[in-house]
Image (cartoon, rainbow, N blue to C red; front, side, top):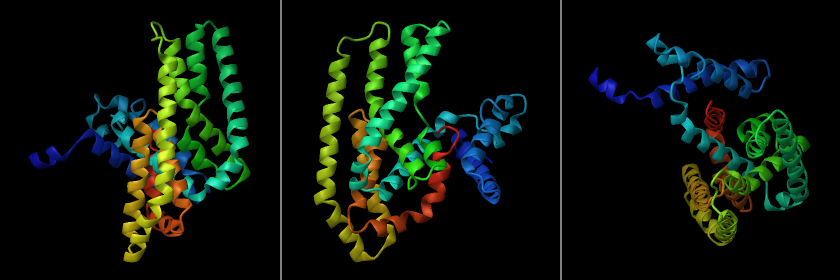
Length: 295
């Protein structure tokens, strides 16, 4: 008994609840041709800290069927979204992304500016301070990457438009963070300098990733092809996506920007079909983690 108590942890219990919910939600909602994301949202409301989780002190047995520490699952949710954007990048290419540039910087900017401005105006009209109205307006205008990309299909016109808006939101996230810092009380005067520093380092990292993809990825996957091992393709691509995500996160950009670039880089190689096949068995678990209640 003591050994089993040592193995127990709230994160492990919460993870088992999510996996158990996935085993119920996915087949039931697929049976009625409804996206499982809706089911995960409903389950999250039911078993989350504001559902059954709020009653665990009165009824301790609810601990085994509720999520009591959603913050502990943040890393899994973040990693699920990273892998989701990586799979989107595998289906795209730099050529197709370049063709979407008008949509990214046109439609994406318009969506963020219009919705953010409208929400800021409404919040200011009901008495919210200007700085608070801007902060809440920008925050509420951002979309859930996991939710939108799982509901839409990136291969359709609507899916491409949604992807374009999400890409612009990820690009604009860094300036938004520095803008909110500038609006905060006792804000530092060097906010613009920090923003420029982050953007310059981000550009340098992205340029370095492009060079890496051009000259080092082909030999890496050629070596994996010689072994004819799908596991080696999976390991090599996992190394690339984690490295790219860590590098972009280290300079202040969103890690999903790095994961998307990693997917685009691999999509440009002649081994992208082998990589896509090696990732096929993990798509269900990627869907579960990116749709978890903390995502």
